[in-house]
Length: 120
Image (cartoon, rainbow, N blue to C red; front, side, top):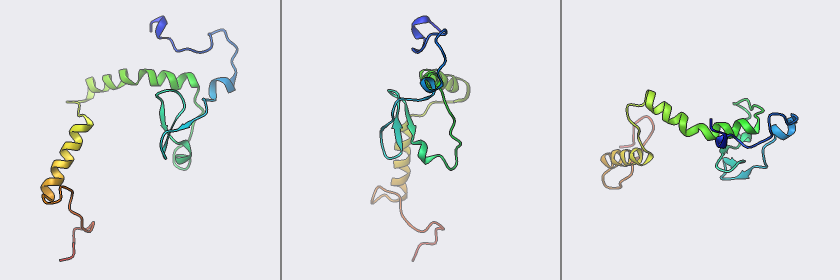
């Protein structure tokens, strides 16, 4: 990692203060289910995950390190595991085309019972 790519924060010789390094900035609500703490870092509101997902104490510098490397990680995953990369717009176009085939008059998927036993 180049020197100018190093995360900002306390120097290696700075005293360790748990509260400084493990307390993120106050969250700002981004939607009903998401919040942002650091710039460009969006996360699910932790209150929505307390029952099923154990919440961990996470140092601020590690959150920023992960967010800075997310594009490199995604590129690595694509190189190693993806036969091709599909964009969200391609997926939406495919879903809309399938919906139009099912119900050509409305352009939306036909509705009915889950079991497929619609009223006749």
